Length: 231
Length: 244
Image (cartoon, rainbow over all chains, first blue to last red; front, side, top):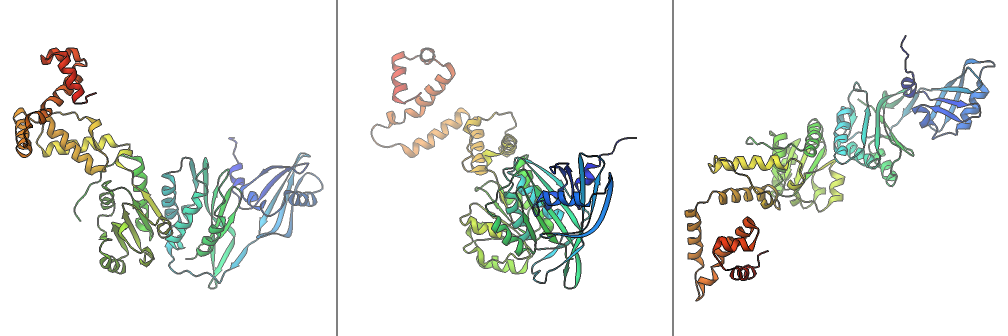
């Protein structure tokens, strides 16, 4: 039987997964866990894993409500099969964001992939690094102010213009919806990540995000946008 | 709109083409900046052949066009006096400009800003030169092979000066003795005056003669022999005309 590389699937799971050594050092964490680490200390999660681990080697699921800033979880799964490593998976709680402030003047139904591709082409004219795009081409069209969103993206891209490579990931956020005019809509995650980024215009990016009805997370080496997919 | 063709084999221009093509279905504002005579308008015409084109020099015409069209190409955009008064909301706008004074303002209005490279900076320059040479040779009915002196091509005004310098080189290469004499006749007829005209116009003959001779024979001694002149006479003339 050929061996299967499960790492890719764990890496891109929207539920955070962290693997600790017996002393509490992080051995591995997936993309969602990296984002979570911006809102809590590794020790908090390690203590949680130890406290909820099964008495002997094995797997134990527990239902409990956890909050770390905007992150909410309804349960955890703790796994260990030897004395060296212990893993913990946190299960995202379904959240409905209610945002009555959104004004969609000038917004039109848009294929985010076309808009993103046009912006990548513009950035690529002078960018000397490599761009890796991982996207979901099945994301349906949703309301975007195309010019304002492109202006916003152009500024975001400049934050990575000195990086050697840039990873762009577009996906639908699982377990979370936005409520607009009493209807529920999906949230699209647009993540740009590199080894480093500039931070001089973070304040301006927050203002532009607000103008585009987008939630922005500005982290050390990545920028994550949560775009409401209102149709 | 007449049929136009923009010739390019440049990777940089390919990227602009790709970016602009992707915006064909989007309501966004794009700006293409570049020096005069770099082919910006022709380039846009090949991508958007059926769009409405409006000259920014015609202010009222521009305002009316913006009110009535969802897609508009604005050329001579540098002539716009007040960018803020233009309403680009939910329209596909492509503006073409030679220069931009208010770059910060443009940066707030245009989501996509592209820069057309100068002709001299393009990596497909040799293809362009060959294309213009063939075209001009055809126009001048010169059906024999001519190699251009690339050092004498002029790129200061991009395509305009390049074409002019190719015309000039091709014409000069095909002049016969009779053509040169006719040229000289016209020139001298206009210029002759005073009481020392013979000496004053002798340089028309002597200067190119010595210059060509030195380039051909690489030695003053050899050239003096070919010209049948005394070595000292030749040296004196070289100094007189400041030939290096």
